[in-house]
Each structure stands twice: as C-alpha cells, then as structure tokens.
Length: 147
Image 1: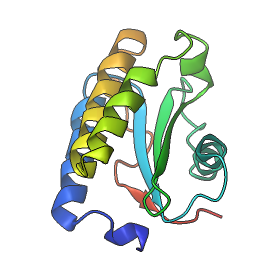
Image 2: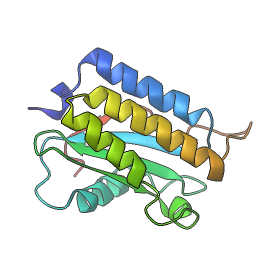
Image 3: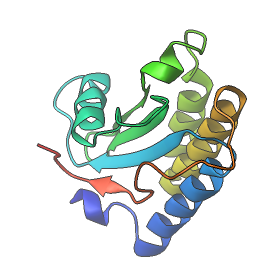
C-alpha cells in the first residue's frame, strides 16, 4: 500500500486537526510521518526522517515525530534534544502502548489522534504555549521516503 493511501482524506484531516489542537497548548511541534516500509529499526528510521524534515530547526528544540510504517506495521516516537534533556527516561512509553493497542484493533486514526493529543498534553508541562508562539513546522502528515 502506498503511504498516501493508508488513511482516507477524512482520516488524514482528523489527525491533522488533532495536531493543530494539541499544539494550541504547547510551543512544541508535532509531526506525523507515514512510510510504506521500514526495513530496519523504526527508531533509526524515525531519526532519519526527523532530520530530513528539519524538525531540529525549532527555537526550543521541542519537536516530536510520530513515525509509522504502514506495510511493515512498526512505529516510533522521537523527541528533539530540548525535550529529551527535560523529560524522564521512558517518557513516551505510555503513548506507544496506547498506540499499539489501537493499532492491533485496526484503529489507526484513533491511535494516531490519541497519541498526538497525549504528546500535546505532555509537552504542555515542559513547553507551555506562549502568546508569541509561531507554528515552526507544518501540521500536515508527510508521506514516503524523505531521502
């Protein structure tokens, strides 16, 4: 399956709306990337995509990528340096567990939406929204190889 076809247009809109809503409470930036295949470690691939999307180019280094390979059914969540310096180890584990449960149920849109909202809530504690905040990353889902 092509990554672009994994979610319908309505499902994509639901996930993008969740990103926009989650970012209203934090200065953090949340992105979703969907690949078709992930041949190796999904965390390694997420790191590659993170760099290629320029997610390290936020003022506070507080970007988060939720990475999903739809055909190989693996995913990862990765945060930038600013986040990783401030949060405890295993910070993303509960979100990953919820995503895994939803994905096993075939509820991919719900899993992504819940993950995005949870990431937003967690980031709010460390990177609250400020009135001069600007959207430093696109809210749209990115697809396929970024190389």
